[in-house]
Amino acid sequence: MKKYIPKLFILLNILLISLCVEGQYRNNPNFRRYFFGGDFWISFGTNAYINISPLAGYRITQHLSVGVGPIYIFEKSRYNYLDTVINNVGHYSPYTIRTHTYGGRIFATYDLIRNLHEYIPIGLGNIIVHCENELLNLETFYIDPYNLRLYPSGSRIWIDNFLIGGGLRQPIGENSSINLLILWDVTENKYSPHTNPIIRFGFNF
Image (cartoon, rainbow, N blue to C red; front, side, top):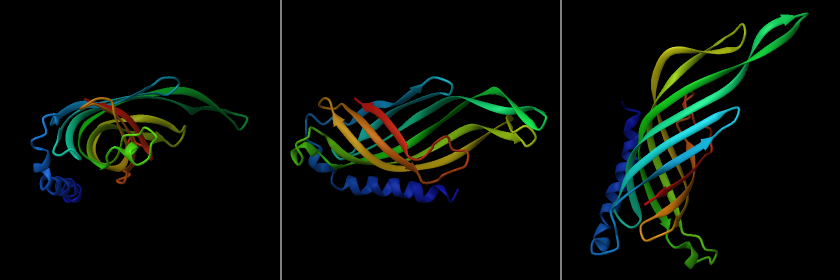
């Protein structure tokens, strides 16, 4: 339980600091508090990857937003295992592993620089920083040392990842935007489905 305390402490401190400056936005008629959206990524081929991560959030101020959301990841990966050895030459056969990962996340995003185009006229929006704590349930595997093949262990585990980073929020309306994030999984759990750096593309509305 102690490993969760520093991560939640960081998120709560960001929240408390921003509450101190909330009043200046309270009377803005165009400032909508609630927003929805998500991050979605699909790739097909020999190795397939589908990530569906919708979210619901709340804008505490015009700079700070917090939110939560479910996570679902499907992965299909193709491997080769040592089938036979003939005349000291190894022969390999292909096989496919399919796995499902699910869980949830809580996050905080802060607009570090708003309306960047006012300083640099290149048409860009806001520079943002982002931190996120996610809890994932995933299937574990073991490797057979004789043929180097992966096998499902028949059990699932929960892991906790803490991601930090930043990126660009490009407004496309009064309360809508597309977001590009580059994140780093500082926990680096050996079972994590992430590979650093993590690149995300999503939207809010």
